[in-house]
Length: 456
Ligand code: HEM
Image (cartoon, rainbow, N blue to C red; front, side, top):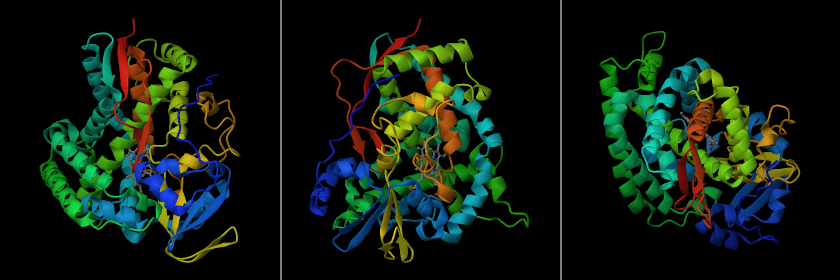
């Protein structure tokens, strides 16, 4: 069993003040936690006038996400404001009837029959990247994170828009996305934690963001118009247009609303998966016994052939690596909600308007619920191991707002690890320091250099 402990930010030994937390959070939202945060179950901090609570135990997470879900369904105002110019009233930031109506239309598009439909696209896209890698010289150094970004953006774009419309439009969309994200990045992400909004120049910066959003809006409007002409069956945009025709023959969503939802899927559907895959390659490269077990499984299950959908459930160790990667490096490490009305949790008053944080980064490394919480041990997710306590493992969130693309992301990641690990060995050059960057998502910081070798 692996005894590898991947790096994590230093934990403070004593409680730090809100002002110190603000200072640390400017650079890295994961550097604000003290040792105690990995043992406590429910926390309250007052940051100037803002009440911030953290649900950090199975019962409090269940309460927020399930038992009193209506009170905590709304994303924090800062999150909504930052993403609204791009996503409009899209699923990720909407709530109430808008959210529930849209979620109802989209849920069937991500059921197992549809996932099966998408796996051919996933496999052919992974095979293309794999052929590109095979054409490189042995021992070449790759920057793995952008490689994974390219792979997952290509998969989501072809699934949503089809190969033709996807390839015609995806580079403009991907570029404009990067630009929008860099604007959101420049805005002070500390206020996602409920810190006050000290952003006098946010509007000026968002001007640039709005221009990037317009490029994306125009590209997706254009795709929808082309899809309406027909001939794009099997793509999500065509499925959307079908699903939108309600039983009465009246459209359920306007074109603008469909565009918002497609943009949500594009945004939510590629960076998270790219981050997980990048962390997975890093972790595998540091744990020789994990790499050996993975190779053994690939030989046993696939015997050298390309996997298909039916193989995914048999690739149990590959899946366990993925699950353990998302435990240690949850792609969305902090989930933030706004309390609609006053509440009481564990005897403590939660005033209306409080920020409620659920922090996968903390609860998935909580000392009470996990054995060797900082070790990389995929075996803990094998079918013969005891299951994690419910609501302590929440990389996809939980309750009604659980990630819509959960199964899509899992199948895509298992296939990517299996197909690429089957053909290549990725190893880290000596003395490479791997650090993380935590913004909206948790990703490797800067380059993630890895040497690429074809397996014989
Ligand atoms: C490993 C990959 C992924 C991870 C770890 C992940 C994680 C998450 C998390 C934690 C949330 C909830 C955010 C919150 O409550 O603030 C979420 C929401 C969402 N995700 Fe994912 N995601 C992944 C892949 C995908 C993919 C591939 C798609 C689409 C194809 C997708 C679509 C969505 C959508 C639409 C939502 C909003 C759901 C709602 O509010 O009802 N995700 N995801």
